[in-house]
Image (cartoon, rainbow, N blue to C red; front, side, top):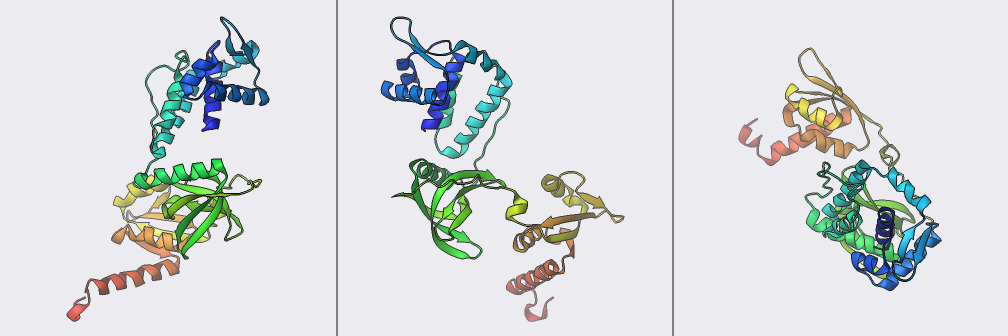
Length: 308
C-alpha cells in the first residue's frame, strides 16, 4: 500500500547517506516515476529531502534531520519489525515481511541479534479471516462501500457500511465504519461477517472519529457475579483475571466477585466450569443455569422411566 511504501522509503533514507531513484524503484518493486511522486509527497509533508543529479548524485535527507535517526535504537527497530511480522499472521501473504526486509536493508547497525519477540495475531479462523481483512483494507483505501451479512444475537441482517478502521481488540478483529442501516458508527466483529464484498460504490469520506474502544463504554458492566470455585479451577481464574482475583475460603473454595456486561455470555462462561462452581449471585444467573441443567437432563433422558 502507498502509505507503507512512503514509510519504507523514509526509513531507507534515514538509514543510508544517499540512494538513487532506480535503487528505490527496484527495492519497492514500482516504477521510477512512482518513486519520484513518492519523494514529492514526502517533500510536501515537510521532510527535508535533497536530490542531486549527475554522477555521484542521488536522494538524501538533510544532515541535521538525519542525526535524529539515533533516536531509533536497536531495541526500537526490533519492536517495529516484530509489529510488522505480526501483521503477516493475518494478512494471508508475506507482504509485511517483504516490506520489513526492504526496511532492514542497510540498517545492520540498528538491527542486531536474534528476534526475541514473536507475535501471532491469527486465530482458528485464519483461512477465512485473512481474505476478509484484505477485502476490508482494499475498501478502506479505495473509499468503497463494504457489504456483508452479519450474524448478531438479535438476528441476521445484510449490512452496507462506509469502512474506516480495522481493529484488533478483546482478542478479536473488528471493522469500524458508518452503518447505513443504523445511521451511526458501528463496530462489527469479523467472525460474525459472511460474504464480505467490496462494492464499486464510492462514498464521501466523513470526518470519522477514532473508535472509542473502552469496554466499559461499549458494554456497561452492571451485573455483579459472586461465585465459589473449586480449588482445582485456580489456574483458570489466574489465567483470565490474574493472581489475587479471588478470596480463598475456609473450605478451600475460591470466591470470585466480578462485574459483567452480558448475562448470556456470563451464563455460557459459567457452564464451561460444569460442577466446579456454585453461583451465589445474581439470582437470575442461578435460575438460568438451573433451567439449562433441567433441559439437558430432559434431552439426555435423565428422568426417563422414573430415573433421576
